[in-house]
Image (cartoon, rainbow, N blue to C red; front, side, top):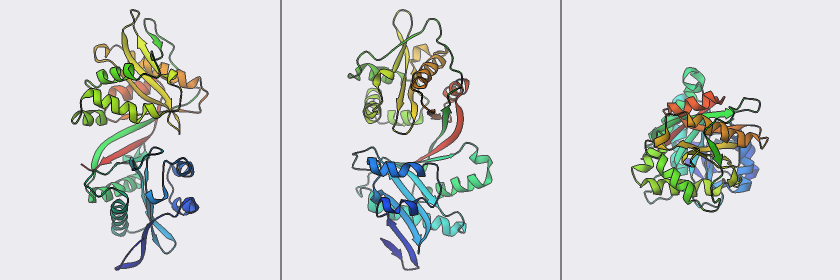
Length: 322
């Protein structure tokens, strides 16, 4: 617990446990309803969930998320402030909370902190109240050295939205061996050539394409509990793969986790067929929704989702320390 001499009533501390979730959730946010399950499933820990208090008034909060079993946080995905406070006081409390929590929670060996991600309204730039909230949080992060990395579109398909029928000249099959990642990693390696994905492009500055693909597979796809026979590879009549789609369930929602066309086959509309097939696989599971995301700057992919009837219901701001 940390108090400040010039503001002795201000206390910064982690929550004691699930018993303080009601306190932590006094500030509304779209994932508040997930926090109890996250704690129970090991995706969050009480000592990674911090609050700023003046007496019993919640002035700010933050939290990191990780995959179950991980020893370190993977992403800072909650940073909220009491927006009724004067701006200077609000931002100052936010900065102190973030610096204090980072010093206590993260490795002090110079390792780059996990990235920050926040879900924001799709029209946040055009709505003064939403813009103030988003830019205030960004200012707090910038004061600690973070910078904007990418803005992403969050997308959603709902049952009843038409799905394009299969096209002639393209067939779909599961991966050859669900227990052997080599086939999918090979295709993932190929499609990194010319990728418009900001995370992929950044990873390629430090690693080979094969290493990027393998790491992505191990850190994400290998951890999904949904069936791997949902995954689909699209082929031409002669058996040549043109691309692939990875429908999955990430523990929160059914999702199009990855979709891509091999470089030699881009520009022929195959992305629409792949997206329709991935959506169809998930729709057959009677899911209430299918979620997806793509970078704001990945216009071809965003257009494909729009054509497939996916609604841009939110955006995501990602910031990094580097």
